Length: 299
Length: 274
Ligand SMILES: Nc1ncnc2c1ncn2[C@@H]1O[C@H](COP(=O)(O)OP(=O)(O)O)[C@@H](O)[C@H]1O
Ligand SMILES: [Mg+2]
Image 1 (tube, chains in turn yellow, red):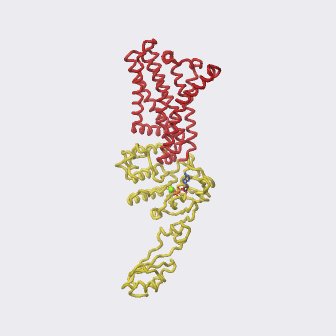
Image 2 (image 1 turned 180 degrees about the vertical axis):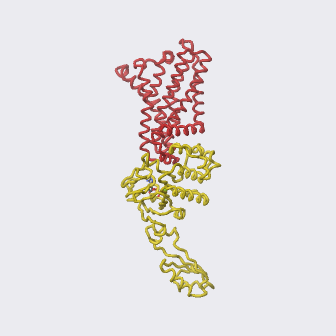
Image 3 (image 1 turned 90 degrees about the vertical axis):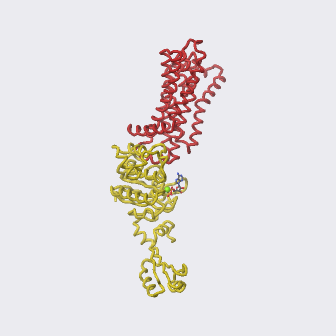
């Protein structure tokens, strides 16, 4: 895997005496979308700052397409969307983007088309001071699309976005990946990035506790499927007793079973006859999965 | 590299125009310069110098206080403010190096100060000249005043970047900038004066004092404008110390300072973690 766009090898980071990142390994291939998940304070933003060369690396090393973080070559290869992105309020969106473009690429791209791409065409000549948080986020995305970055680092890109903007964001992430950019998306909310990523890495208190595809993570976590049985005629108590589940109310009972025993359980419950009106199956939710890994597997 | 510096300078210039800095700085300069020109017009004739010469002399005294103040006001927020808003982190991911970013801001802000000086001091000069005539020498003195005021401004713009990079917050940067102004423009001269009085006209006063004085950019500015023009020296009555210095001392000091201050600011900025 020497052709990875981004390689993080056994990286450590100290803030004062506390170690905020411990021996982190992570690689992102060109065109791959990796979600970096973790609670607030897990160290996501710190890791991104280290990739950008904006804070010292206290152990291990990082390579961006073969270049060291912070070097001019590395900076030219990276695009960045900061957490709660901000710009100079007195410039217009168009002026801000033009500035960034003239700092990064040789031939000035079509700024208007780019602003249109992120849905800011109408506001392009308004001052950024008048933009909403979502609009600033869109402008932040527009500058990520400048040039053709080898690596794109998006820190909490969904924060402040409404659902439709979120769809746009996903489309842009796909577009980046399709052009061969390695995309690293830091987030504290799994559901917001899950569908958009090829791989998920989970940080817990500075330690990487998981790094795999969503399917493999689900299997590895071994989380139970939830069954909810709708019962007729207020016989919830009997059914709860018979199945070993918990009575939720007069009409429903809830129980959990491992993935392997699901069919067996279903047959057993179906055999109970007419008292069972319906069965709802809920596979482990992403939130459960995330909680499982990010709290150390106690779920 | 030049293109990147230019791009930053252009954006900074836009900002200076939009937030009224350019207007305000120019307005303040015009106002003070006009006031001084007319207030100072009384002694005209008594010393045999024209009105513009007197005006340049009093504007020199004014500029020593005003120009460093304007320079620091303009620059103290440059880095601390960007860090506070969170814009620095993104800007630094672009190909422009820190030196280039700083140079772009420097070019824009010094240009703004230059415009303010030229319009402010220039308009007072033109009015004095129209009102009571001007000699080629006094016009030369006015031109020198504008150029040196811009150089003096450049020193303090760069020093302002230094404190801006050093400070934890914009408020702290403002405090440090006020301190810088006080030290360079007020306390330094007071200290020197005290030393001269204690020395009582001895070795220090004759040999060391002029050099120490001219090492301060604000004093170098004063000395350059006064020593270079006899008329100004007479009307200000402060040519004494400048006389013992070689003619190049003040210009060298005032030309070196912007460079030194900029290099210093860049060194501090390099260590900033956004
Ligand atoms: N500039 C800083 N100085 C000191 N500690 C910091 C700084 N930035 C972050 N930290 C600490 O490092 C840890 C990781 O923070 P961060 O990377 O921002 O987490 P995340 O982005 O995952 O929420 C936290 O404990 C935080 O308090
Ligand atoms: Mg963060």
